[in-house]
Length: 115
Length: 113
Image (cartoon, rainbow over all chains, first blue to last red; front, side):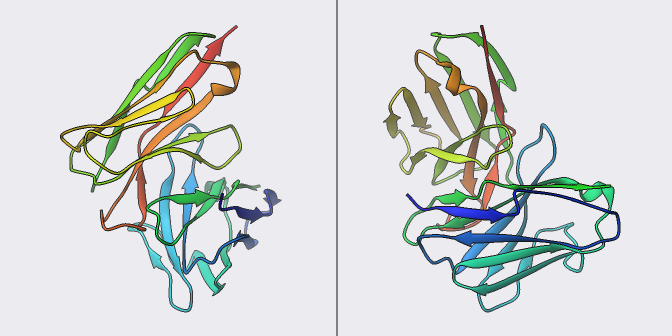
């Protein structure tokens, strides 16, 4: 099956620093990837759609200048949380659809803790 | 926007019992997906449903796409310890394929020793 990886798996940072999270499709190409955020005991909430070669599209209420997305190649999307604050602490998960299938494969997630 | 409500919110069962959970929507979906999430992991796809009335099995799991297209059910037979986790239903927001997903509220399954 399709494999999506994320790096790092967890990160702890000081308030005010920026954190970059990578999402890679390992055995397929993805022109589109999605970024989700999940707070404890809650469901996944879509943050943005990452588009290879063009700007990301953000869901309502998600600050595009706060969460920078770069989809530089067909196998890599990055999410940068700029000037992170404690309220940004969450579980960030990416996903990628496989062409021709109406399903998505998810990465293992990145847990961010901002102190 | 489209909302998916799952029930029950949580379940506490004994090993070997059967499990039933459902997912309802205020609007029609053309695809229903069921995912399982283990603690600290990303969701893993269990079953995908594409036609109203469709009944699909994956081992001990069986899922059905409701006739009205506004609901779906997931059953787990003879539960085992590794079934513990959170089960999410999901559907494509645009209903035109390969699009962003909306997730249900989740059903947390716990197995009592």
